[in-house]
Image 1 (cartoon, helix red, strand yellow):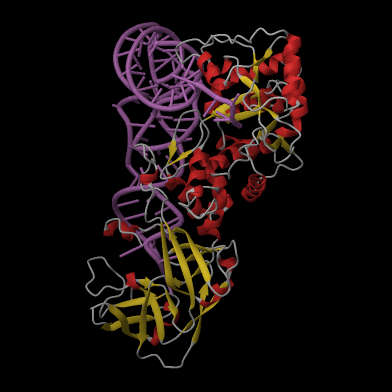
Image 2 (spheres, chains in turn orange, green; image 1 turned 90 degrees about the vertical axis):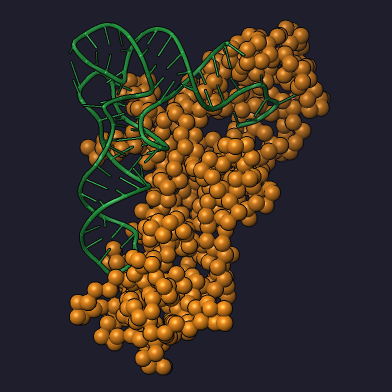
Length: 561
RNA sequence: UGGGGCGUAGCCAAGUGGUAAGGCAACGGGUUUUGAUCCCGUGAUUCCCAGGUUCGAAUCCUGGCGCCCCAGCCA
């Protein structure tokens, strides 16, 4: 029953197809695959596909392969292969022993190409790239047959063997499937299936100088691995007839089927490997793992929990219509997980000195604070309280507007887990900037309690000045300033110039010196933060993973901190 | 003007002839030692449009309209 209800929750048209294929006996075992090309880092759009493919395998008792689609050595690198494996594991999915490479099948693929030649279904074409384009026709005009289309089989066999042995320079000739130059589907107009590339391959080194194209490699690799459901994105929809044509014309060991779904688009972000690569190459971000990047490496460094990304993937669903998911959905998933799991701490990002004038000069109290008030089992910690503190600059206003219930002259607020304090004096510099606050505290309110039942609207976070740990904190906003970057043509102009703000004078609660890598905590009232990879024991560097929801800034009129 | 897809609330998304699920966002209200969390409440007389079939249509039929993808020796 519970299995059924979870199936219902995750239900989508592809899972329905899988379920039908299983119940109709159409297939006995489910096998899916995630087939990245190692030419860039994985992003959250890939996460959607990963969760879909691995999720189906998990829920239907099947398996999911990780297969690198490494058929073009001019673009692919070992670095990407390693990064992709790291990212999938981090996401929490496991290919077990099923790690494959399309390049594992080069010999078999070559034999099948020969088979196509022998059956009169492929030929070596000497036309140049320009000529091939010209002969291909247009969307509305049919193509024309290449003059080399009817070469004798023996000649094709001989030429193809010479292509393999390196007799020709790149571009000299290609192997083409012989299908239909007049097809309305351009993919069927004698698609190229092998081309000459004299580039060292990350895995096969210099063994090959001809490489199969995606169309020729993908379906056959699926067949070799006995993939039952080959799930890909919509742009491959009109490749399906070609996918099927190869399967039908080759003695492959199984009969896989391709199914297409809509790729993920996210507001305020770009999920195009080409553009992400450009951002990295042009140093518009610090790298593939820049915390503003939608890459899994970036999200990880930013402090997004993998569970949140998986939850997001299941919430957005899978369908065939083009859609732009609101990034707020992702943020909700992140906050949801972090709210449950992140320990609470206090940190002042923009410090304002507060002196408690009636607090004994050398006294220090250790006050107890809950690590997570919503989760008793997370325990408590202790925080030092002393005469000199820091509070957030935004938490004081000399002339507060209505509904501002933080600190102001002659006002009383609660210091969380500390005491109630009242502001008695405001110290300013020559420019009139507030530099320090003088306050008094009520000794009867230790721990922030009000034994007399008095109501205090404002509760502020704070940190003891002499005990505070200094840190740099990096605040991030969307990398792009508009919800659909690039719609108006120039994507670079849509880059948000203030997507990174670095705060250098942040004051953290002492126990934060021990914040471990990969641990995300909540700074009360400020948001979720994690240690950055740049952090060292001498110089702490934290990232703001995401802020808390903030209805106060909304009432102020959209001003953000 | 060729071929392949898709149109259900601001954004996702169920629904497959029996009278429009759910989530996000937004907006009210309650609780609160985080203006957070949590809780409660508010949305489609209508499913791109127009006809038709039917007792009954988002679902079937016909005709429009709109959007996306395809002319790499990329994937």
